[in-house]
Image (cartoon, rainbow, N blue to C red; front, side, top):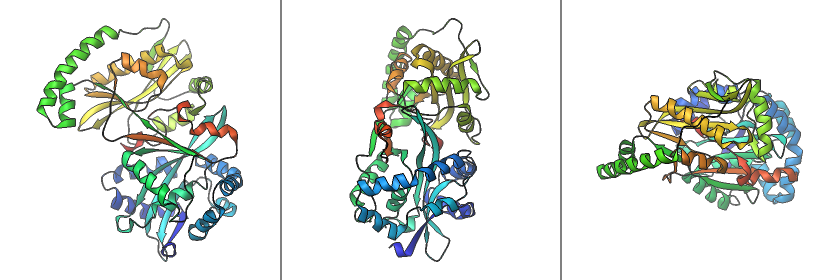
Length: 417
């Protein structure tokens, strides 16, 4: 099979062929992927630093794989699909994104792709570039040939630490992938990779409409109206307006150097956290071309104590508010509550039917509960998957997802809509 196909690193000259593949594979979301392509991949400002990090850790990573995996299977994969070599990495321009392509031999047609975005993390107090795996696609005419397996395996031979978001179907496919990896001559994920289900927290605003949209049942809509009335009464008792002397919440157009200081202080509270400095946040939430975000900050005098990013987007056919990203100094529940209160007031003026915080860690769930949010068991589940392939013992904590600070804004989860 490998004789019919070859694997290559993406070049900007491949854009049109990649876009043809996206239209054939994901016709509904291809326009959004293509609109964001330059911002997300070709002109990503972090490509250069991530490329240098890959080169610096390349030999160490391959040595780790050869000592922890079957050397014979790794060599078999190398013969069929090739592994990145120092000269290959040196030949690639630093500003090129790391994207893997599968092409038919003798032509330029792209039949498979897996994207990877760089994101800087603080892990045990030190900065490491991670790979965010995303946008996996195989042309419908070439499915069921095991082409997705080598894409993922090849990415993991070039990145010491990586993470991604999976749906229920993707999680099932990955389980099949692990079982089938030997047959396709690749390296399998083992104890170096872990996953954790993320339960979204939802605050219904229009209970009947939301229930009707989700279930299509009038009876459920009526029952939801009664439930909504009772929970609003309970919420009015539990939740009280929040105020902090000397602290005010303001809208911000962009992030400044005060955010850098907040990020440095907050990163001490977590073993694993994406770097949320002004450079990253302005790229992520100011420069994105097709998603208008609302950015707010809690400030005292000239100090920033926390921020929250949120937006309105259609979900289940109605407008919903999404709490995308946040960070507060000292894990302060009061500051977080102050930000949530301000965001709710803004979103209610936008006539949203529900407010969703898809990903939240334990210190903040009690605050969401007091604000009328409830854990929601949707049929489509979301999983965070992390992997670390390194002899550095300080990176072991990366796969302990209980020690992460993570939000919906990490990786590409929220970029999909």
